[in-house]
Length: 327
Figure 1: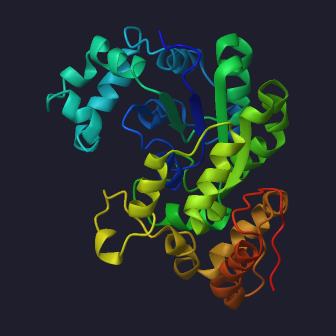
Figure 2: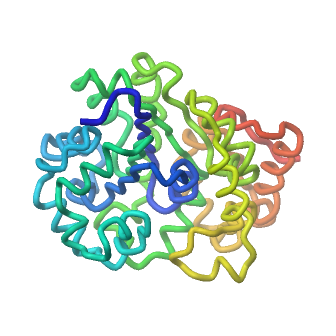
């Protein structure tokens, strides 16, 4: 099993924007990167108050963190195999499996790769912080070793991105504003509970703060978690966070111009949709420090300006409690 000295990072996020930070945390080749999205799909609910971490879902998180792939539920394996066209784009893993999908699902192969990794990162978009609280309460070794990043984004940005995706439906809760509001509110209210156990090993960060200052922002985030920013991280950021437009056209590419991408939604989102989510989530906006747009002009120009003004003034600050104001 994986030793307690290997950093375990759990990235708790929401549909449609987590990729930016997750990839920047795992650039060293000796990192084991687990996307648990497909397994999480088994417990989506459109009724927020009914959502809970089921025993059948809780166990896989533990087995993954222990590099124990002998006991991964068959449903997860079968579901992941059905997404093989995405799976093959994980070049580091695919090369080790020598291009054979079945080899990549042999427990002994994945366990070996996992155990040799210097870091574990799990990204989850449907796990809530109260579920994290239960995990660390039930598994002492996780409570002693895991580091948690609660990655938040402007709710309007999340909503704008979801509206553009055909697979994101109301029935699954993805295009339900109340569900999004409940998820974010619940995480905000629960944040202090796992913090009692994890202390400095849990942090909240705004996506926009890191996107505007990828290098210094990521260094600050890693420092918060007691991790070092390696030359691999710096090199990756320089080549992948400042890409030209010609290199970002491929939807599967991980090269982005992060500085521009973070606020592109302000030009997509209809102002009426912005008003709808602002009126639904005023408490979330207040808690996370996001400014309210009172006109279409403010939506399209002032939100980005408020972040950039603060970024220019404070440099690599990623304080998720700071309230932003229009200048």
